[in-house]
Image (cartoon, rainbow over all chains, first blue to last red; front, side):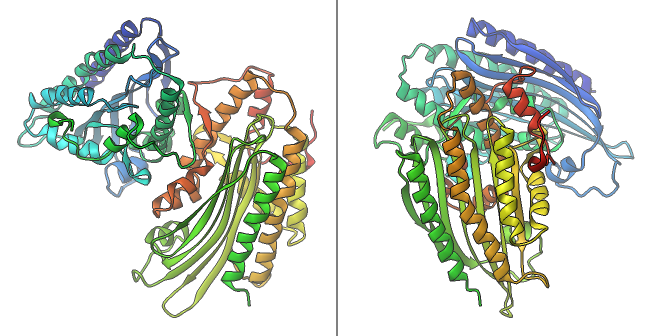
Length: 312
Length: 312
């Protein structure tokens, strides 16, 4: 039977593999590790890279925590009223990645994979996986967008014919900055509460999550290598800083992982590693009609079928 | 009897006076005005100054809106369950200011003054004022802190002997970045739901709010003039950008006005004028012991009695 330690060990190993691959690709930046413990049980390893050749700031975080189920989780994450306080215990393990590149032509990427167990006083255990991977290019390139979505779909299709379309739609809903009426980027996949069902065993779910994790490094490294040498000017850099401002808005206002971490007294520095190294806010910025920035702005909408996208 | 239009006219005039005073003090920057209307009723005037001699980015916003009371307000602001949907109407008018200066030695300032009316189907009207003024120096200077708090106390004392101590405490609670375990700055005063009571008429409350509004321009202009010519280096500027990152965190994660505005579909550009022009996030930044930054960091705690503060 699938054991929670097997899952946390897998995420820990995935963290090692991804950090090695990113360091190799970056050629200059090195991850710095901070190990932390959670007073109420468990802890994690935060690995941060700053001022690399390709990566300006990035974090690859692993954690495995446990204890009494915090009220915040049962109310907001599980949407259930806790009847008996302190009656449920939980175990949560996961990996979380955000990479902010130096070049405006290399996209920001985000991955999160998590496993959750809740045990009630009768020792009944609920188990589920959640996560996602999504891309936030400062300049949207249709070929890269198609490639990104195609790679994800290929992985999804190995596990279920419905995963990609379902989880792609979910990402379009989730990575949306409501007050700006725009997507954070080109989306990807997002999924939550993948539990055992007649169709899937929990092992099936884990296999899918493993596949998504293994896709991350080759996929992002190829996008880094393809775009890192494109020359850029201050004009492009300024647009990057504006888009990073929107990224910070999404993470601080909407992101559930960030809210969850801050509300449950998580390690702020680990949670907020997702924030950009530099960002700007310019009042009422408008893109110039038909500029590259304008083209990107127009792509920041839901439900674009990137895989079958045909440029006009 | 005090009329809501008299109050909104007052705030509109206050916006004019403050913008004039800030333009004169800045010598270079000019406010740009955007007039907007709210689909459901009312509207506002946003005035934004960017790239001035002293002010890098600032907003002085006026609004007066009305209509059916949104459910978000009755639930979160008034903490009451709406029994009959669409049964209550509201009127809200206010002025909101945030100024981000160029120099790290000139503090960020924030003012908000607001008036709220709610009318139920029986035409019973609840009326109350809310608001506050607080200072966020990048480098805390004890003399400026004492001066800022003393000026506020003098104004408060003219209206009630309890206002300053009560509202100063409220500001210490409100302007606190919980996940960082630090104050946003040196606080000031914060107050809400000031209604008619046996002790105060609604006119008394309005007189107090007017006094706070009139204090803003002379108080901030004196802090601008005193500090704007202090020479600074890139080192100081970097620290300013870090502190601005914290300011953005507070506004996006905790600020009720921001949340309220975004949740009720307010004009995003007007609401988010409070965000800094440039900001940075550095992983796990630590101040150097006994540095100026360290001194400021140690002052970012609740309950400092700035008026009677004696440097060690």
